[in-house]
Length: 177
Image (tube, rainbow, N blue to C red; front, side, top):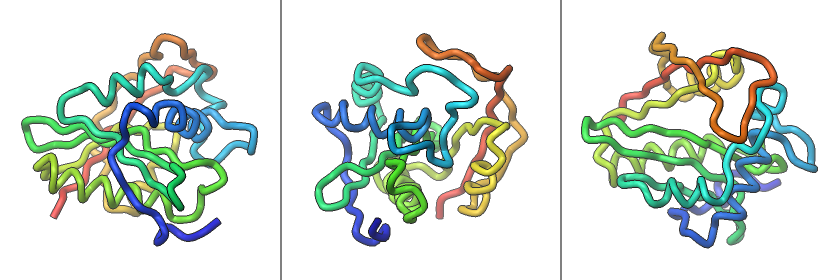
């Protein structure tokens, strides 16, 4: 596993759908290499995203999936969606399980913050994190995100079901310089 300095970034295109779906589902639901620390496999059953869902993200206005590549291979991604009020929403941060712990997640978040500022005109990045994922909330707090106390229920999307629940999200925010 190399360090995050050897990573390049680019926006995803339609032909990336299969690889991105595999990385996202591996990160969120576990894969053959074992469960990463970001797995929600004990909370939610069913795929996090499929190829059609990925293509729907690409088709939305002010929406981009940034990819992290090492030696031309996709090893991570993050979704950003801008809004008219200067807030960009970050989601679907995913790192190939074998690459977790390399600093790639931190590099993807930094690239997303830069992209949101430059390309989407965002002044704030916001996201929703499952409240039961305390280690993930702490990870984002170490990167300057602030818990807002805004709690919303998580409604299971089609094809997914709760293994433990009910689940809730908390909104996190970070002001961009």
